[in-house]
Image 1 (cartoon, rainbow, N blue to C red):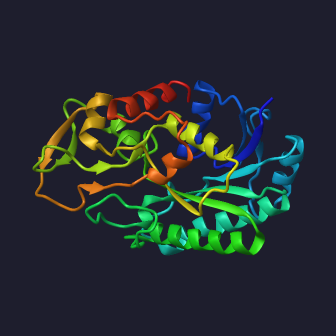
Image 2 (image 1 turned 135 degrees about the vertical axis):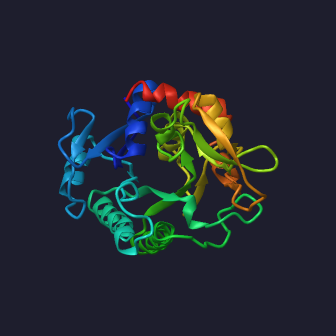
Image 3 (image 1 turned 180 degrees about the vertical axis):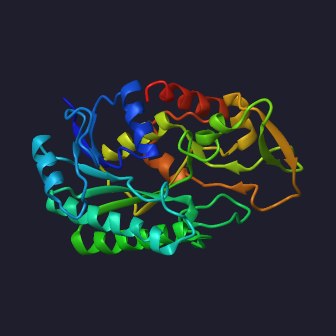
Length: 298
């Protein structure tokens, strides 16, 4: 019998699909997650149908069916279908989270874990971003996430809820590199990748889907209150060329000069202090291995 129960909003999205597969590959012993679908789920035992987040009743019903829910994970959004430079379309990300907070309160759920993004920080500043750094988003998507975080903070204070926004870097398999590279690149038409004078491509903070699932389960089960924001990635940034090599994706170098955009990374020390017991895939090879393992369960 699981000690902790949670609901996940966004089961049909890229990250949601990877996490559902991760839960089958490496089930959590003490955490049970029920998955929200906009259409009736393939198996009612794994999740529930909730198409309109402004109506809290489906969440209330699911909480009763599961014997209560301890946490709500909000990973739904429009980043996949919307244009990230369109403020009107990106505004939906704020509205979705706002509706989820209201529904959680109605369902008696006091803990929310919300997917934000490293896009809130903007361009690289010469060091890994920490949670206290100033926010300078470069597009409407990042600006909407900044607004969403502010809304979460205000509503947490007003309603007495615990809301933690995760500033996620790149999730292997849900990103633009690995998520699309296998379909795009061939030996005859390899993927073109910027390579800087030090011999590496862009470095980013990544996480594999199994590691992400383990971290989320750790945060769900956490007894102590979570901070309002947390950076999320593995301990060391990885170079994109190392990921492509590990995945066996054909690529060709495009030499470029030194640029601040080579290193846009996160300092995740606060996350590791909170979840020291969680085992993470830390190298490019291990991150790709997680993605490939989960792909087989999709």
